[in-house]
Image (cartoon, rainbow, N blue to C red; front, side, top):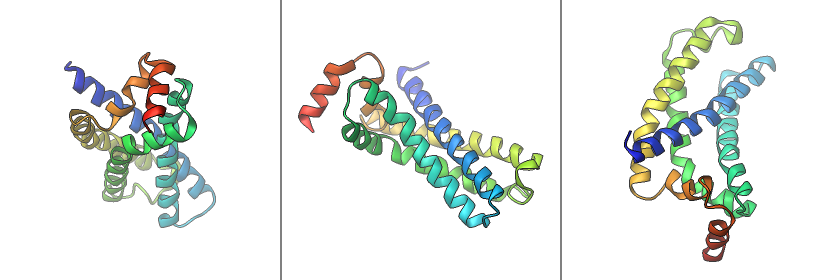
Length: 160
């Protein structure tokens, strides 16, 4: 596989993981608490961003980058990818008849979630590839994920 495609697939899968955790947790909390669909979706989207950012920030901190430097890098690198994934995921869920109506015990919900997250991956992949081709997105954090370690983190902090 082309190295930039591999990096884009990795970035998209990483985004998908955070989004899926947040989406499912938000939908479970909203459903269990009896929240309206709109509030539940807002909670799920908020948690998807939170977990997406968290999963990207922690490895950067482990690589030696300071918390705020890591967070600002993650905001720059991941926001467009997460937003693309969330818009797509929620649009697909809304278009699948009955996916949001039956709650968490409804197989249509879970099948819908699998379909929605798959479509979100397909839509977010070219976004991540576009960003990587321009030295943005996951390309900004790549150096910290793959052995660049503390020296790269220190260099980044000195310049920002």
